[in-house]
Length: 565
Image (cartoon, rainbow, N blue to C red; front, side, top):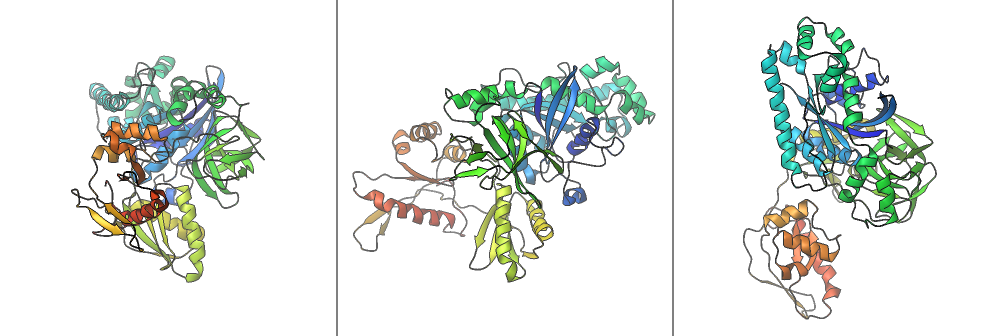
């Protein structure tokens, strides 16, 4: 495990992540040097190649020799488009390091900030690669001085973002800002396959003057041969990213709330391949031949074919049918995958993205918090009624693969609503239903999702039970934004132990008495039971909650969901 590096490549859309991945694959001898940069090998689906953007996070494992030791690098190439941010969040759970790519001309962009936040929230260490430096020389015709100033300002912007996000994190042992001197910043051009960093300049004797000269004289091939990008980046990965043995003792307490004194906690901290199996699923994908493939991080133990494992939140066990590693679009089956790696397995039919899979019953990992929620909705219906059962099955599969999508199936009208992060998100999903499943579907116009919220405290409202023997009195009022935020970030939920939940609510500004009477949390609404000394209330409570949830899902103004009450 000391020689494993689990990394993600993340950036704003079109800053060159997939092109950079191509270089690394070519450097590891997995694709041809000539086509690297244009092949976009990690965009494995047809629609990704057509659109020229990454839609699904893709995994690949490669080896790299650094200081005479062979290292195994498990890499995830993530999408940059804001609609597919959920893939980035899930990828960060599986890795220990994130290579943030920034376009030298555009600098740090909004999505750069988002991917950094996603990485730091999961306790993943960042490094920086400034791409498209050739554009500064050839397009903007900048001199050495201007170029240096521009690159330094990009580094300063990124460090400012890291500092702002890391100041509340107590578990980071060292300063995670990036710097040229430490070798945590690389420069280069993924398209023309060259790159440099401070350590590589010392090794090859190349400096920016030489680079500018070769670039201006169109000697890009020579530039690539003298300082190949893949060596620079892969050396940086081996030297500066933590291996699982360093990373897991820090990351496990952050994402797992189980007993830190238990034997299981020890095997995860030590990345013990002989311990109990603990596997966190971060991605589910469909393979036409193998069926459902669950990809994720092995925190302890060794995954082998034929093991029977528990999946958190479901009854019984699932049997693993095969274990493998992803190589871009291909999946290589292997005998076993030990702790500290990213593996892909088939046979976990009950698992969804975010499931904890283990050989013993255990406290599951924290759920993966997606920062954004669905904002756009489209209706989908089958053109032929015969396709309806198949469409419902496909939609349920879609919801399983991508937790940032919400599906509402109305079996009475045959109309189904898909809500997602943006128009492109929904367009891609409906196109895949048409092409991959062969179901002709009709889609409605995209509509924006609204939310309703009470503006002030209401009067007391009386409700009677059908036999007129019981009277209920209810009031509704808006809730403080801080409490709403705490629920959205997953800091407060009904799954928590009651004492913890009370403390979290009090921290967010709720008074002590009220926090003790929380009966239910539905979306971002809380029901407080303010009754005193009433018998048999528990018998009717379930019905009260049912009625309340119905009313909150269909608000009084426009039948949109209610929040923050």
